[in-house]
Length: 431
Image (cartoon, rainbow, N blue to C red):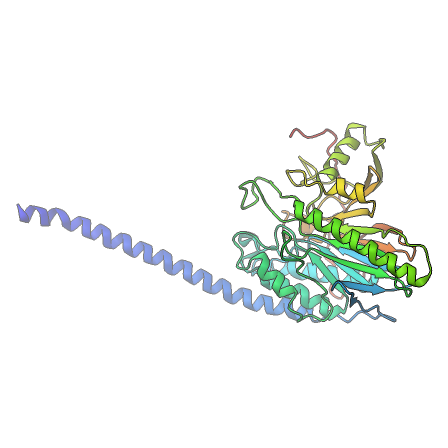
């Protein structure tokens, strides 16, 4: 009986050893792949870091230098027009698979900022794109470092609001980690602030413009619009988050505080106190962006009582506007307070339109992305930046600028692209 048992067990042992060998071979192959990938990425990232440092510093005459005010927020002092450039969705992969496209993105940003010579740059999210099957890495800090190095090399003051891709669920570094990196003080021209700890998100901040009399003429609110929600951890179902209630409350509180500060400054200057105009910047569009564009579609692409078309196209398919799936109350608060006149977002790379909806201008920034959308590196109509000119009286003007024009002279050769004709969705998509 015992002999039979031993004889029957021998094949089982052989199968077990064979399975173990297969598992070990697979593990060794994975480790080898990771090691090779790490080496290639390290070499490539060093090359892109070197490229980021290769651009000339922007030649400014009397560059404005922001300083912190009594509330600890940065303020530019100017009696002239202030030029702000919105950059969005740069999408630096930071891995071995995205090296060439990362270099294209760096070249694009450098060329536009060198020509525009802005006083201030606001990046509305998705600097990083650490998606492994497109970038070849999970390390989202590499992308942040490369971009921060570029901006410091150019010598332009800037800040950012986070996008959904800057810190994915599978990324090496959390939102808090990347926020800490940006606020480390290691970069001279980066004036990012992590924001109050008791408010949702990272990087809720305000930057002001005041004149030589100490009167604030414009405020710029930069907010974290978060990433995914409702169990959509990886974002595969397009369930995007909204601004949170405590962010709306924080915004309202800051508007009130700065109106009070301005009233005191006006008293000292012997002028009448004026309510401060403001602009708002974040990544994921408000639901009102969708409401406005759907109403415009329904009316045959003609203005309505609520919607006034300003410029641009809606190049995204299907839903067209990929906003948050809930309602955050921010638009209603903006209307109530009467401070913010325009909202600027990113996120939907092929949308670059601007509309005035119920008196508030809602604008998509021109995107940079070469990596995230399949084949987008071959297209050019959507790529560029958005110029915002803030006048001394607190009013503003904004317009898009396409990258593929002669005034943007690249240090490295521009890539050939097709200036595609945008085919806009002509019927309201089914929800």
